[in-house]
Length: 292
Ligand SMILES: Cc1cc2nc3c(=O)[nH]c(=O)nc-3n(C[C@H](O)[C@H](O)[C@H](O)COP(=O)(O)OP(=O)(O)OC[C@H]3O[C@@H](n4cnc5c(N)ncnc54)[C@H](O)[C@@H]3O)c2cc1C
Image 1 (tube, rainbow, N blue to C red):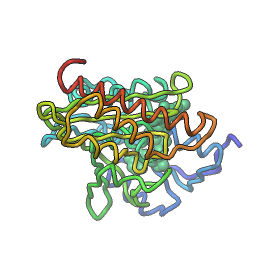
Image 2 (image 1 turned 90 degrees about the horizontal axis):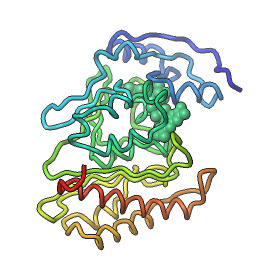
Image 3 (image 1 turned 120 degrees about the vertical axis):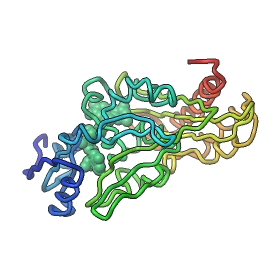
């Protein structure tokens, strides 16, 4: 089936209007942003919303990258291409540029949004792993006000998030801390494809000690996209090759990949470990100012 089921269509004129429309149309209404995930699912009838609420007129309000209160703040309607090109984002978190370089193709990156990517909650989604590693939070709005949820608590499972029926994600906030370096490593079957496995890392150094670290994994069944055991093994210790190798081993041991058309589970597990080691090595070098 390549034709969506019939649906109603509304265009929101503001965030409040989008939320009012979500409330009016109930749990069968869905927001559409770039449409690169939702429309393909509608065409094969995996999704059958009764009403689409188009938020593309909110670009002026919700498309931005700025620093505020020590955080990198990214509006939900910011397109992948804007995050890829942002010198501000790259100055503080190179892993976003690393990740965006290997997300899909220019057509998808020109339309697909940061909010849509997170809300789609595909287990192979790159930015979920990158934002989890960066210890980001998201701002979720409803008519009752706004709540802030850490990305680590945002995903409830494949294609499921904590965003309620009459709620909307409006912003992603990434705290900026001194001594940071970050990197994203991905293996895909061909250019522009989803990950076979990917690992995103943020480290914060205090001298030669890793004061904090975030490791996000995509496409390998990591709980909340995180490699918690690998993070714990590094926190408070030295940033040595041995410590990095052990963290890679733990990341591989504790993820839970499945065999599918992208490869067998043991290959993905191997990649999770190897990519974590490479991302950690690059992130540490960047934190030390040894690598761009
Ligand atoms: C060919 C192709 C290749 C791709 N390759 C990759 C890849 O390599 N890596 C990767 O990570 N991704 C990849 N993607 C996915 C792509 O990045 C996402 O589809 C896209 O960015 C999702 O954003 P969107 O704005 O298009 O979301 P939409 O399709 O508009 O929406 C997706 C979901 O999010 C909800 N939603 C959207 N915005 C909000 C909001 N502000 N608040 C609440 N809910 C919202 C919608 O209701 C819907 O359920 C690929 C997609 C395609 C088509």
